[in-house]
Image 1 (cartoon, helix red, strand yellow):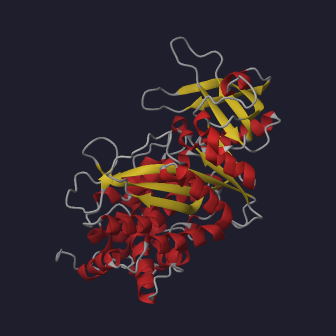
Image 2 (image 1 turned 90 degrees about the vertical axis):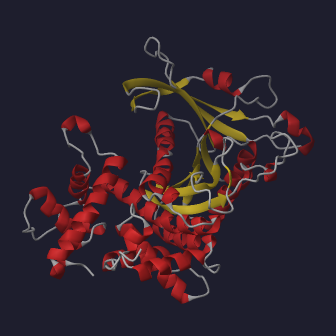
Image 3 (image 1 turned 90 degrees about the horizontal axis):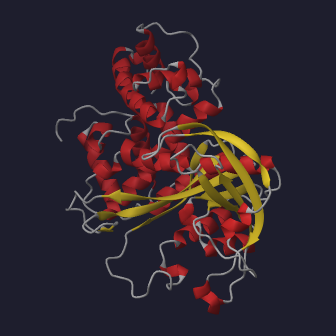
Length: 467
């Protein structure tokens, strides 16, 4: 540790961003708030590095460890500050997508960490994070609206999963977060809750129907229709087609990329029958709109592509259906957020001895991951904006010099789209016509290399350093 003589002070731009992002954190001690701002500003400049490497000086590293060990520093206070910043970002958005998903942090290899719980297969240990990411209607991530961090109990449940009340199930997080977001966001902003098949929860439909929350979730169950012997899938399959659309299906783990896939869209209004095992509760029967997206003529030997969406939003035209289909694809944004948090910021490699310290660290890194995710998608949304909305003078100077192999810079910085493409090239992106837009992984590699180039640029151009 004593091999860290250089203090890597964050730039003014990073400090300004961090102040907006978490400067409202209330720990009952303003010194802790200042420490959080400085820590987040340093991590956004060196997100992939360990704490000692990112902070540079041993005194700063010790201060960070004391911060994560301080009982006054709560995960709730850190996330609350980030949520306030997110609320500020979305206040002028007419529609906000609140995308939920869960991820697992695996610390099995760090046996010395105290307070962990089981995470799946026997012998694996860690904890869970359920996040709610705000995104614009165009799919640009805007920040975190809510979270749940928890450790699974080691004690076996007495009742079967189906018979336990929803309050005793981990799936209650979907309902709690939906309620929290709806109560937090301004009533003048239309919020649409978006979730995968895990969010196909009857209680969530009841909550949405009773409180006029809008939801858009993937159906997982072929539910019974109320006052009928029919089931969900056959009812929607018998509805007239709204129309067809042609899309490209990206490559998945066990499926090659497929281009020009023709999908048929059908919709029907359905009222779902309450679960049979909950008959004593006298539950209401929620009415939803179901949208079936399916491939009628798949290639020989290929399984047809198909999924069902359930929503409180009206589905009366092909334009409605295509809009919701597009919003459903934005669920990948939150998986990308969790990817950056785990693989980019490498939080699973942190060695902070207790789960409480780790959870505080993850809350801090969540702001870093959110900002990096925003950078990726904002470049697609506003390609002509100057790159200085996300890069410091030193960063774009180092980037320009590395790409053009010169040290004389133009008077004006490049636009955001150009800068992002250059960053991708640093990460190995070839930029051929058929390559399309650079993905998150290659951008992440380029961003990491840019930080090293910026450090060297600042050493040789101290007068140009911002901060």
